[in-house]
Length: 420
Image (cartoon, rainbow, N blue to C red; front, side, top):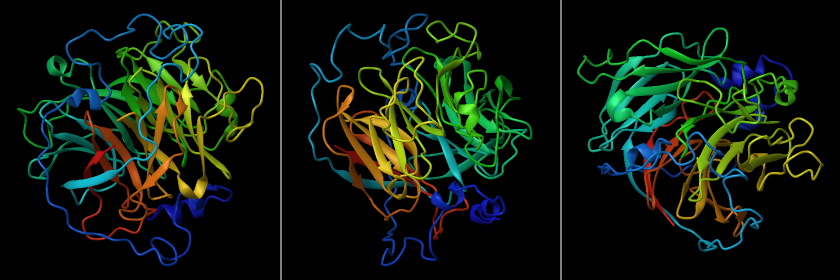
């Protein structure tokens, strides 16, 4: 059953319209999508753990056990947001250099492995597959037990342990019959395909679930801590409820415990007042950025600080209200519906679902250096996930088979990009 049909059964759920397609055409009037079969690309094994959100290789996680990266305590006192920072060019560029994989079913989370291959989560099947980036071969490594797909829920974000080389742990954020939760599983490549995932060890449970707004992105930060973006499930009151895990960004140890530097010592809640966080990324100065769905007016890119209240449902977009943090950049909702983000070449790169484009937001420190630019508009349909591979290389994951798209032969795909 398609998303639009499921959401249509739930009166008043606006996102079933905004994040879906309007009209009968795949891209609206005159918006025929250009497609071509791209040559496969063998990706070199480069900083793959960095792309999965792990600590830089060769050193201990900076900030571990102390102030979180990018927090006021970890930054230079009194420095202006863009003071001393160099800015990337106002105009960027994107080149699609290859097609890494195709024929994927509802891909969501992606975790690059050492050596360059990828682990990819199927939201609706509840499975994790390995993609060989030299051949495009897709092999299921296992199914995550307990996943209950439905609406925007299912098997969502993936991340590798900061110590993956020794512990072989894969972290997953997923929806069950009762909640959203985070679990970790050992990946044993010596076992037969389809049986390579160990039993889930639940790290954190009790994140509210819903037909919509389940959040789902997870990543290990430069401090070695695990971060998660959650949604308010359509119950707007949860975003301002400090006791709820819904509508928040969470920060925890790899074991799921509260960590020093959080606003409250006994809580994993790091920031609140969010509607539906689906993108997390750190810039070159270890500041945390997050993308967020708006409702009727404005989608957001936020600079995240511990203890920040980002306004939902009291504020959407830049409200300028005391006690709430305004977003750094906003978009009309038809232009974005933002999902995954990544940082590369001095810019945040943001995948857009309904907007069907890749946004570039060049930064000078903590402020935009120029107006956001859109790339690939309408060429590959809905875009779900962006992964930084180091330098000028990104991976981009399409989302045409999520029930709201208009899939064509070969969907869904993982594309390799070079950017500047």
